[in-house]
Image (cartoon, rainbow over all chains, first blue to last red; front, side, top):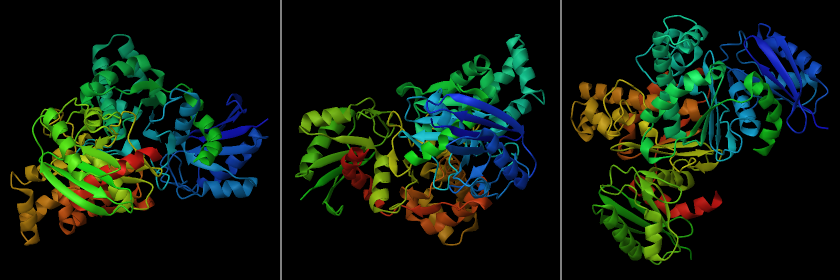
Length: 291
Length: 291
């Protein structure tokens, strides 16, 4: 029996799964994320041992990941820039380890077993603290020439807008992420705005509508560029689809180029929940072989 | 000997070429574009007969083209919306005709025989009156689920910006096309601004720099999304690379996410000139077979 292990390295926790050969999750484990690149690598090796036995191991990490498994520019993993996670884990564990961006891992999972199953052209967008993304085009996972494809959140949509954590101004994630919702709500927590909107509060609904406009603006841009059949919305905001979807769909149609002359892509929400990244990490070694 | 014929349907002229089996152009012809979809189809059939004998025929048209060769939303071809160009030409000519967006055709040509030869991840951008585009990812031409991928010009980069011909506000082509350059120059013709900048006029150089900023902003967005190895700039503005490239390169590095942590894509200019679209149209039937 083949067992595929996957670990999703988040800013606060490691989430590990083991899949059987049908893709079913047969084990799930968690551990707090330590501080610093050295500790992350060491504890990842320990955590992998807890998931053993397995035949293949994949790891998803937040940030730019080179095609050789070096983590670059990982603002949510303190002290982990320029860590050769892949090579160092392989040395500690004595077997191959596939490493990819966490949103790309979530894309693989949703494409093979979740909301985007059966589609050849897919964009996955994780709307969390920031915005991450993954792309499938022409029936294949697309990683880009350096492995950095899918940094959707740093698409500039308002050049004179507020500063982003990346140092530039008006990035999409400044408006359309969880942090963006909080900004649009004048500092109120996103969950609070959602709860008020559900309870019928008019002002909160206006905030959600404005937020939906910004989400839709980015989705329309991506559709103009990529013409996907399906857009999967994941991350924390996927927990309230009935609140977010109506304004996003309305604005999306208004903002998409020539929307009267084309079928609209399916806008849907991630199906695999918080384990999508870990499941995709487990599927990663097989996905990369196919490439 | 195999002869591949290709026709690029422009707003003002048809440009036709015939390639031999090495890809060399052995015939080039021109004809004025007539008004109206019916006349376009009829005269395309006549024009194809002038290019005969040939073994395959491809046609590039400006606008959204479905995967079955129906032209939609073609603002630069008066009265040609919803024309089934592919099927109608096939009926008139009695043989298969491949039809694609003109910028996608230029992409094929530059990828197979021009500036992007040998690269697996390429974005081509035609900076003409508007902006068109074509994508190669993972070593394959990407057309999107409907055939509409690459509508790069309608990426919104300034939501409260000036209105675009498409009815939306702040599309990239409103700033970064030939028409955009003219707007930034307060109505002066783009050629005039280029000539003045070349002659050392400071004010014209400032306009070119501002224009370069807008071009770079879109290129940075596309690089964040797609991580290409190579970006090819085509269209009319490719005629003055030494004027446009320095400000574009400077601003591109400033606007690209995490540009210190990654190799920059090669920014280069189209190599095949005004015949790129027709050459790509000629290469189209073979390209689509490979898909």
